[in-house]
Every structure is written in C-alpha cells, then in structure tokens.
Length: 323
Image (cartoon, rainbow, N blue to C red; front, side, top):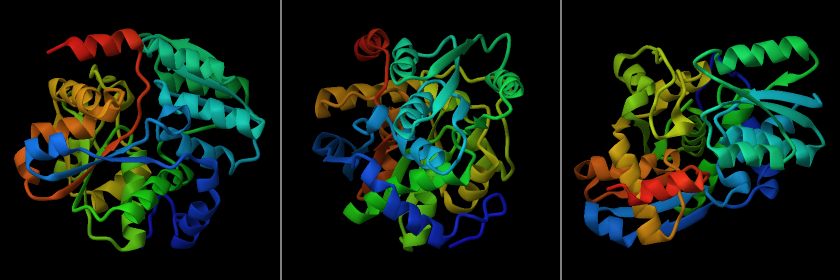
C-alpha cells in the first residue's frame, strides 16, 4: 500500500481496524444487476447503491468514522446536504451536537433532514459569503468545536473505504464508475482496491459543469473551479478536490469522465424506470457516464456506484418528466 504525504495514518493496519470496527454501525450496501442497461451498453452492469445507507447516502460511513474518532462534543461543518445529514445523525448517535452551514439553494428535504436528526442549520447565500468563510466565522465563535471536513481527511477516506471493502467482497469487476465531488468516496475506493491488491480500474464520473477534478487529472496539477458549479448534481458543486484526495486519485484513478447534466438526468430516470430506485442527480453520475460513453465499456464487468438518493420531491418529479 502506498504512503501518502497528506495522511501517513492511512496504513493497512489502520484500514484493517476501521473495517473491523465500523461495519456493525452501517447498513450493508445494496447490489442489483441491471439487465436492461447491460443489454443497452453491451456490458455486464451491477449497480451498487448507497441510497439505503443511514441518512440516504455513503456520507454516513465517513461521518460516523470521523466523529467516533474525536473527543469534541460540538462539530461544525459545511455541506450542501448529504454530509450535513450524516454528521447530524452520527452526532445524535454519539451524543454530540453539530452546526451545519448550508447554502440557501440546498434541497429543502436535506435542510429539513439535518434539523430532524437534531442538527442546527446555518443557511448562507453563497453569492454573498462562501461556506468556508462562514464556517471560519463560527469556529472563531466556538473555538472548542471540531471543524469536520467532508472529504479531505484520512478518517473520512477510511470510512468511505468500507464501501470498497464490501464491493470487492461481493464482486470482481473490471471497472468501477464512481461519482466525484470532493473526492472522498473515490479516494476510499482506490485505497480499498490497493490494500486488497485488486486489478480493477477505477474511473470517476464528474459533472461537465464542475469538471475541476477531470481537468486536474488530465493536466497533472490540482485545479479549482472559480465559482461554485451550477450543475444539477448538487453534491458535486465543490470548488476542488481535497489535498489528500488529489494525492490518492492522481496515483490511483485511471480517468475522470465529464458528464453533461442531460446524461446525469438520463441516468436518474433509468434508475427509476428500470430498477425502481430513487437516485439523486449526484448519485446518478456513474449511470450518466456509462450512458454517455457506453462504447468504452463494451464486454466488461462494470460496477456503477450510486452514492445517494436524497432529492427534493418536487425537483425529482421535474427530473423524471424532463426529456
């Protein structure tokens, strides 16, 4: 296993400890074969869905592992929704409190969920003040609190690696397609693959409208978006990959595919119509990538990671009916 400058703690021994300790706190991921899509794109497709994970996305893996590893009683974080929900629920389970900075444009269902899990929501207009700046302000007011990073932390990556452990225990895919925002989930899959000494190719799926990770990988240097992307995939509206995530992905990810919003929504509609699976746009990135570049995967065993299913009902209805 590689040694990472930004996280020397990510050793095989540490991953083994997390893989033994964390699964009892999780719901196992959901595997389903997709014969319709397999026939359409001429490859063997298996969907790996985290929509049934606690709080509706993979983020609970990261949040629970992170919060269980710290002594702090109050946590402050920024999130468009899924990480905030996961932090709120993990805080509730672990007897902590949390404040989640969220954009005013966040899906209402995600805002309400953070509050339902016991978290305090701090809404900001990102055109006036960035999420990072607001978190910094809150940390000045609460210096005893812990600032929880959504992706750029070894405990976050290790928590997400448990999904990779489950995938490789159940499947032997040629390719894994995984959504990319800040890089926490994809980094977790890469280190799980490397630790288990598998040969699977891991490809990222990123919104074309927020393609900082793809540009970074193609140019060999970490690049940031100038402004928060306007893609329909709200969970991938990040400015850049985390430093740790970039270090892992530039060494271990083959490519990052740029997915137009039209293809993302096509993946969302496919999951509903043919799998009876509710998927949020960010979660549909892997399906959109497969539909958009199907010829690339012909004859292969492809695992599409669906990262979450938290989507506003009214928007979801619009997405389903938009052709």
